[in-house]
Structure formats: C-alpha cells, structure tokens
Length: 280
Image (tube, rainbow, N blue to C red; front, side):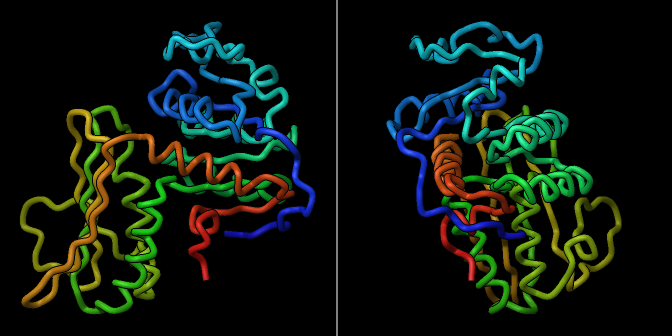
C-alpha cells in the first residue's frame, strides 16, 4: 500500500462525523448500531441504493431509535458534513462513492470485496488526494491471522497450502476477499505470485498436486458469517490456522478503528495492518 501524509498535529475536536454506505443492509445496520453506541463517533449520513426499502426512514429505525439522519440515495445529502465514509457495498456502488468522496475531500474506509484491477487502480488514484483504508476484512482477529500466516509460511516452506472458507448463502463472490488476501499473504511470503499458483477448483482426474499450488475451497450455506482456515500440510503433521466470525460486530469495530486512524491524514492508501500497527 502507498502511504500518504502523516497525521497532522492538530486534530479536529469532537466526535468524528461518519457516513455509512449500504445503510439498509446487514453490515450497514451493524455499523450504525456501533456508531450510535460509541461517543467518539457521530452518524452524519446514511446512504442506500435508489429504491431501497429504508429510503426516507430514520437510519436508526431498525433499532427503534431516532437519530435525526434519514437514509438517502442522494450522495450530496448523504455525504454532507462527513469526515469519513464507511463503504461495504458492491463494486459498482463503491466506484460511485469513491468519485464523490474524492471530489469532496472525504476519507474512506472500504470493505467492499470483489473489486477488479480497474477498481483497485481507481482507489489507488483517489488515495493520492484523500486518505483511504482498503481491506477485504476489517476484523482485528483476521488481520492478526494474516500476520501469523506470513510467519508460518516463511517457516513451513515445502508444506502444501490449502485455503478453506465458508460464508452465508447470500454472499455473491467466491472465493471471499479474505480468503484471497490470505492466499496472497502466503504466496508473497513464499516468493510466489498468487495468480501463478492459485487452484480455484478441482474436478475429475486432476493428477498429482502441484507442490507450489495454493488451493482454495469454498462453502456457501445458511447464515455462516465467515470462517477461514489455512492448512499447511507436511509429512507427518499439519498445521491449521483458523478464524471464525460469529457476528459482524467485529467487522464494525475494526471499521471504526480504521476511521479513527484516518483522522487528520491528508492522503494515502492504507490497510488494516497499518491501522493495527502490524507492518514492519
């Protein structure tokens, strides 16, 4: 990630004003609930797609709580007064939000997965003007696991690596962005490019396993929030590093931590490793 200008000495006083994209979704609800429960932050806006069932309603209606912030599809209204936009939506929505935030000088925390190379390039370009935290998973635990995977891969050279992930039936991309980040972490530690060694599916007569392959297995069903396991299989032993999410609350907590990290920064592209001080 390209790092930008450091935090300025003088911080803006008072609660940090945060807008939430995808306010009518599961993650949007979790973010709003977390914001309302923490006096360090203030909900300044709530965005949803046109035609969303919550449009025009109070953003806290699902909690039976009045916030004075209406859910809107109008970017100008939803971003008014915001210091940061937290975005867990779809790639096409994130691209529109990115352009709007870049124009207005609003920082972003992006947890949207499934971004293609063109979208990632647009994020990097915008980060030359605004500060952005981009991460496929905002969980503190997952990001600690990424650091552990780097350490394990460097020590377990020659072991076969498989990534197994499970999510709810509504998830639209596979493998998950988190699974891919885990694969990229292992590949980088082993001096490989994930695109050159990833095996996304196996069927029929596949032949022997390529020793340099990093395999992926995907499970979808029910209401599984998110389980990820990386298996290092050697001769006579195997090591499994696993993270299981039982609630989206951990993603919301990590997102708010990322928003706080951005306060006072002028520009730059960061990830959760930066937010948590795990780099270097």
